[in-house]
Image (cartoon, rainbow, N blue to C red):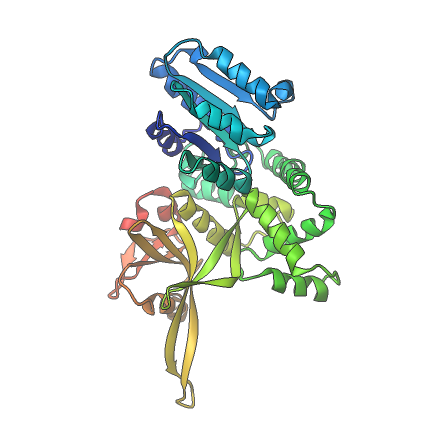
Length: 417
């Protein structure tokens, strides 16, 4: 079964022959290879490109170990550029190639070579490649399946799709498995065998048990404010383990580099500045998060917040946690200052949205609690509350919009209601 990923495919198509190395990044198993070797190759063939003009090398395949030598892979590619027509060079998991920057720089000197690479480590690729080529590296970030993509291959209703998506996430292979048992087994196995093993090896982590415990803590408190210093105190008081905040920061950075988690920084809306610490962390795939905890802690409200965050990132928004001050009086009529939090400040170019994730708002008091931070925002950008119930979109007299999460996820233009 083919899962269409038209958004990413169109991004690649728009970048053809732009004189840059197209760097396709994302968590392992999110569909980068399928995007290039199936969907993009199909597009090229339909455009009349000859099959022998598409040069492909899967570098994490043991059968291609000889091509991990920089000089050998250069010769391999050059030998296959047989004429002056455009050739498409696709290297999968390029981080397995030593001195890959020099290799890619050489390809850029070939007038008829259009180069695409994938990689599963943000620091190794996004910063090094883009910086190395000084504007000649063009990144396309791929995420696990959005709810829209997931629903396109799910056999049941939207409600049933949500039940499956919030529990098992959006890794393409998970979506194509038939039974819950298969999905659980796959997610638990791939977390340990692929993600953790890769992180431990790449970052030379000598005490992986500490990394394991950190992941459990982050998974249990997804969307909560935390910091390496706070985590160090938690390890000391609760787990009776002495781990320095510097070590924990290094572990967190390794998880972020592998795209396993993402950081949402706090942003002071009044002073227009970032607050360095604490921050919130979300999992790139909620199925992996749930698998890590043995599917025991599946509180739908926290997972919904993680899914909303991921959806905003998929749509290309920079996502921060908003901080806004509100002044008032206490019971003794003394002036007080409250610091209110907005779950997400989503910005993309000139667009900006303030979004609250509120699983339920059964009472007026709860509704007031969720809307209070939005009212305190000192500008007129759109303010939205997303709830679990499948309700009709409504807007109050202050312009605050309330919509159901399925409406938000199912329509890529849902924020523009």
